[in-house]
Length: 263
Image (spheres, rainbow, N blue to C red):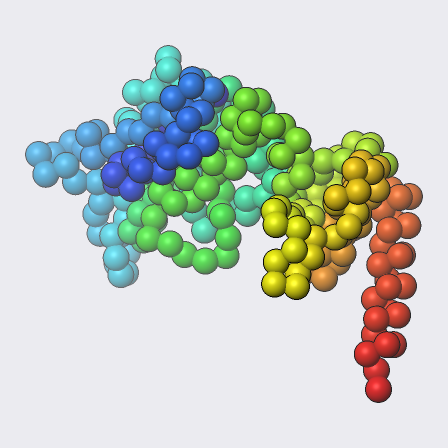
């Protein structure tokens, strides 16, 4: 996969793109990320990319011409089928969108700055607009990195063991019976490692039992429990018989715990 990132601050992206699994994926050729400085396509000697907004108002607006030219210069290297503006106005990024984008051979990410970009970039150049949450940052560079890292995890070979991706939060993965749980992307289960006992806190016995079916069931149940408590909105898609059975067990356990704690 090739990802082109257009920005006026390439230095923000340099470190993260060289570090950890993402940097290794790029080095190994599993992912090609190219960063373009939009200022290189400015039309004046000052490399200006912004101007005051028509109609007045606070702040500056990124000009459309340098962005259009920067994207058009990618033709032949990038299909330009997916030109994405990172913006608070976009659809909110979730795992479903990540999986959708991971199927694409390439994409272009445009990092906005200042008060935003000229609307003609949105309407005549971009094919999509994505937000990473309901808050405002100084620019689109950090959202671009979030998107690149999330998509990269879905590419075969980037994460050492594919199973570790299947147990991520929001990844549908498999249900308690080991069947495909597509459509039910819930929060991930608790994770433990050595030592088995630390300051009186013990790893659940089931995780050390060697019974893989029991471990899978426990993890699914705990995922459902955490999702029920923290993100109940995600449970709507959990319609399998086994998930419903586990949720009923959780309801009974929570009710019993509440009765025991009542004076």
